[in-house]
Image (cartoon, helix red, strand yellow):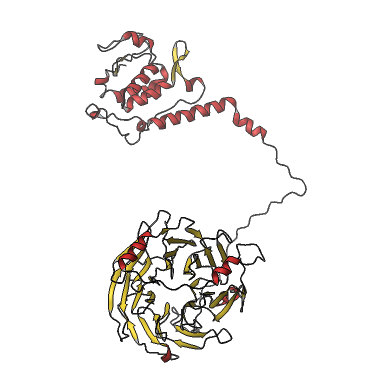
Length: 606
């Protein structure tokens, strides 16, 4: 049998490979001649004669076995025909060194295993257009095996032959110990077919065409408290709580420097700067070099406040777990100036230092308690207590002895600290489902502003009724829930509101008409999701026309706006990589405070 030159082999390679697949055990192939890119002649061993091609090299052919010739051809050609690849694997089983009477014998026949067989699907049909598409990757036709698959099958076959020759499987069976059992033998139980007996199916009332008996509905609760039972068991006991820092050793007293700062007299307010000078001051404020970032509480910050002392920066923060942290920027008390307390068990939603008595820090929590921090006595006194749901508060008098509180159920309570006990003086149910913010006019203390669902109402505290109180003025224009609403700190002639419709609005309240006019609306991304505290626009206590608010923009920043809507400055720093949701200005110094969701405070100073 003869295979023509590589250039003329396309029509004959399939027949040649089929022939070799059927007769490969007879030793018909002996030598081949490689010339350039193709085979020359493959001859029958009975003739002992080599026919040369005009492109052949007979000297090289005489020195190469049939396996070496095919391997050389496959390695030189980047995309050899599949017929030659299959021919290569057929000839791999024929080694000229393993001969009997001068005739090559297959490995499988010598070692006593069954000869390898090929199905008709395994022999691939050549691609007639291979010459035209030479150099392109050729796909294997259905029914064929790739080079990798053929090599894998051959490796498996050789491994099985080797394991059989050393009798490894028989040795494994001989090494297994016999199973023995001492004591009572296990009795074999007779397997009995078990069938489940189902109860008789009853027809439904609908199939029986009968009317169902009406069941009475449970009575609706008059008022639902959020996890009231769990909170009642978990929250702190009534009365004063010892002021012991949890980040210090037990029975340790408060640092003396804290008491000194806490009782420091307030300095007089400085003269208000012009807008241009104020903008320059903001640009000079940077993240403090002496540890401008500190972790003050364990969890997400809900509220922050500056102590009004001017000799040092003393800050307070309340977190989600009811913790209250104090941080002195220029001190080493506690953990690098941080003292942590736990007067509450739920989020500390609001906190403020008393303007008349700076020794008082009032903290309000969702657990229904309002407490005052007395550093001299080292206790947290209880000022007001309800079942749960307190949300916000503000001072209703200039001496800060009277408070106005709001809860999640739409009630506003008037609390007098001079009255013994922890109850309110009066309770007023508004027409809203919830009270999100309560703020008192800085000059005319009888006016209380309440942020309701989508309307901000201003009430006269002297005319409040137990229910259905009529507001003096209302602020319209909000389409979603309102997060906060605050009077301007100096005159109360402006009100800034933060609404979840992504707008910050400024209203004119110089004259309390039935409908306060809208001055400016600033588009601002206020969608924080459930894992961040709500953004709130807060006035600068030193000015009546500028406010600060956190931002969701990247890189992270805190922005200061004028009441006209003009951006005054953006505080940015490479260390500020998170959203500062809660912000506050110092009442006398050029300092800005921001808190994030991991319990860290950032301080910008000049």
